[in-house]
Length: 108
Image (cartoon, rainbow, N blue to C red; front, side, top):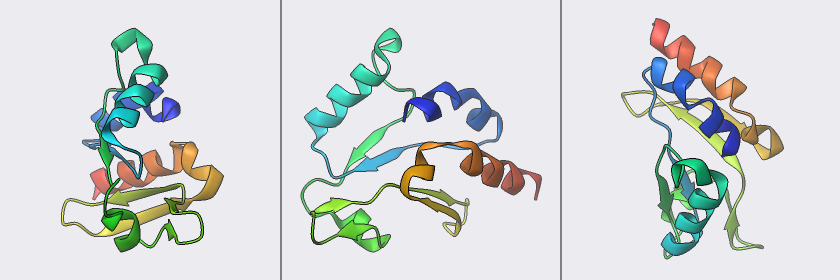
């Protein structure tokens, strides 16, 4: 999330809305947001909680029944709601591929 925060201007320029979804509770997400970006008292994009039902992580196919958590993933969804790019695992931390996908969508 820190890398996405650092590159927020690039995503804004690409007409992109960033948000995070986590199975953490709202208070935990508030804490993480403030800890990751103390200089601005929080990240420059919303963090949404999927704490109770875990519906989003299940619907997007990244829920691990064994651990009860969502696997790390980045989805680029176009304005029509179509998933155009998926980055899973440790590479999802790096915003480079997501930015490239967003930039390509802007050019269309």
